[in-house]
Length: 223
Image 1 (spheres, helix red, strand yellow):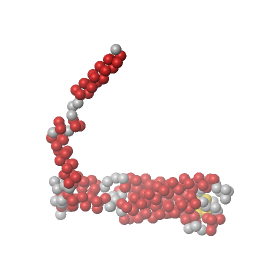
Image 2: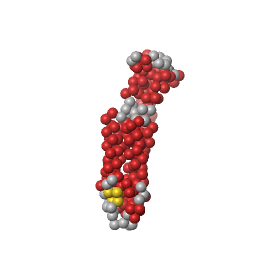
Image 3: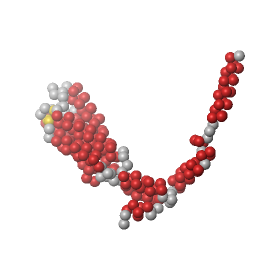
Image 4: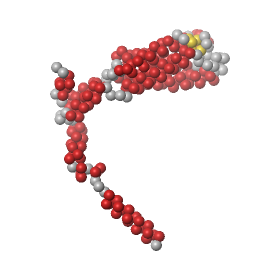
């Protein structure tokens, strides 16, 4: 049986439940390639130098090499947050397509970009090492975070085709909940009786009369 036909026979409450269920699952479409690219680039960044002599994975794992190189808290935070948001949760979003996971991934990825600014600034101002610039590894990781944020933003802020389909059926369904029924009744009343709708009231005469009164008052004051 066609799902659209069966859905149309459902009550308003049942359609509302279906709409909530549809909102729990994402339709990634072409946006999944932004997430996949972000995951791949971040993984590559971990095996490239963060600064001269220190790889990204050595910063992530709090290795002695990273400690001896004077890695700052901002740099540690960047790789920890990026691994959670840009790599793990973005990969989970692609695989499981769960909305809650995408939101958490988006939050972590955005904070990762904030920490990128801190990490670069702290690296340039640190006095514990002569290396004041990050290397290609972190630059690649920053690009990965940007791709993740862009892809996730495009997905979580958009309604899926299924959600829009169910929303249209709810609007056309005669079995509405109390709030929806009241809104429809008010809309139908305004459409059938526009003279009762305050938005359509012609108050031009009243406005002209008020303007004339103000002009007469102004002339009286001048006299």
